[in-house]
Length: 324
Image (cartoon, rainbow, N blue to C red):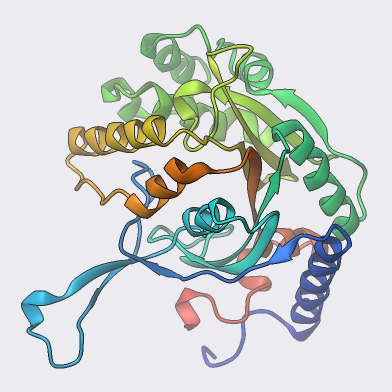
C-alpha cells in the first residue's frame, strides 16, 4: 500500500539517532549549524548532474515574466557565501535534489550532510570524516589510497598517463560489454565508468576507504595540488559498496572557478545539452574572499543504510519517489 512508509519504524528511529549523533559531534567541535535556501537562480554546470527546475511567477505578473529557479543539488554554493561572510566553520543537514534515476542507492530527493572547516586541507578533513563515521557506524578508522593506486591495481591502466584508446581497450580486456565506449571521446567519462565498474566493488569492503588525489580534470570545486598538478585535492569515501562522501580542499580563486564553469558549459554544448546559468553570487563571494577551508558532502540516507544493514535506500526513508 503506497500510503504507508517504505521504511519500518525501527529504521526511522535509528535514522533519528544518527541525526542526533551528528549534531552532537559538531556541537562538541563548536561547528555552527546553518540553514540555507533550496531554490536558487543558478545551478551546477557539471555535465553529469541534472537539476530540477521550476518557474516562479510573482502574484499578478504576466506569465512571460516568470523566473526560472533550480532546486539545489547540494547546499555548497550557499554555504560558501556564508563562509565568505565570516560565518566560521559550519555544517548543514538538508534535502538535496537531482533529476536522475531512482534505484538501490538513489532517490531524486535525498538528505545530505555538508560541512566546511576553515584552515583544514583535505587530509585533515578526511580524519574528521573518519571520526564521524567511526562514531556512527562503530567501525575502525578508514584506510586511504590514491586514485592512481587503486585505478592502476584494478583496471591495469595508469589514470594519470593514459589515452582514450587505453581506456577503451581496458573495457574490452575486462569484458564489460559496453559498446558505447568505442564512440566515447571524453576521457573523464571513461575513467568514471571504469572506476565505477572495476574499482568501487573492490574497495572499502572491510574498512571505510578514502580515495584521494583525483585526476585534475575531475577537480570540480577543489584546488589543484601544489605538489603534483596532475591531481586535485579531492577525496571520496566508500564503505561496503556504497559511495558515502565527496570532499575538497576548496578552490578559493574566483577567476579559475569561473573558467571551470565556462568549460563545463562548453562541454555540455558538445553533448547537445543546454548550458546552465553560472552562479554569479558564488563568484562574487569568492572574489570577496573565501577562507582557506575544506568541505565535504555526506549522504545521510546511505549512512543510515549502513547502520541498519539495509539493502536499499527505500528501507531508510519514509516516502521515496514512488510513494511521494
